[in-house]
Image (cartoon, rainbow, N blue to C red; front, top):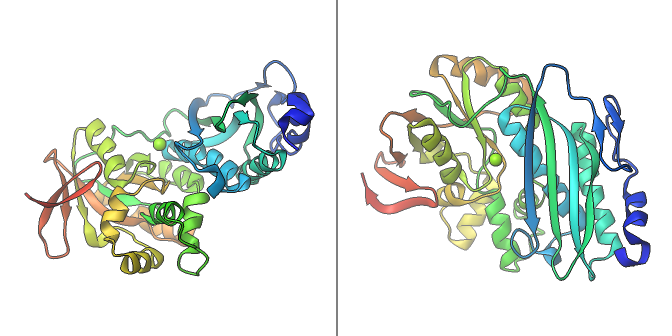
Length: 336
Ligand SMILES: [Mg+2]
């Protein structure tokens, strides 16, 4: 069965159950010309949107509907997390090709609803239409934060310590397995696939960080560590120094790289879609924030480098040599 058999309105009826997670403040959910809800009094509205196109951003045959829905919402939640906000209302628009089954679509909404329920996000509407060949998904997400509690990219300060909330490079390894048709069902490879298909949104961590004194800037890792830390450097007008030994790489990625002959640090730098948060923290507050963080999340806040005044992007290797790196990764040959 596909969308044609039940029509757009039949489909909306089917998927609208379980979309209203947090009914407070919602006056009209799915079913009218527009949704109506009350914003949190006195709070600033955050809005982000992300477009996922089949064959450009995902391979439909390599993923399940559930994973695709989960990821489509997760990447938006990650943007709100990077601002230190609370995610609230989501709007989902999809363009569906004829060969897409109703089961796949329902599964896609299940994936989104799973995450929405976990983070108290309402699915308040959207649009459904037909597409000639490719499946296209757009999620728009509204979040909120008080004006003084928002983290930006352009507010890093010289001397700040650069931190990551999680491992880097796993998702790219998962992508390598998918695109090279390598079975990922072993204990080592499965978590790499999971990192790619079901990235964790660091919303709680972002909210925690924004409330700690000394946390200055943040971004989420969507394009890769080198690229995203580059946005902070450019927008804050500062330099970056990263230490290759401090970049958090999972045991699974180490084993993957040993097996397929890759460099884990390169994977972590150039890989994308990790959706961890990078933040910069004043050095005199670092120990305090790190101790609070580990107490709260039972995970370390990985300190990977520092903000400098050089205007350069430098990677310090384990033997002390300095290499420059660019948004696409790091240059093996160029010594500086
Ligand atoms: Mg982002």
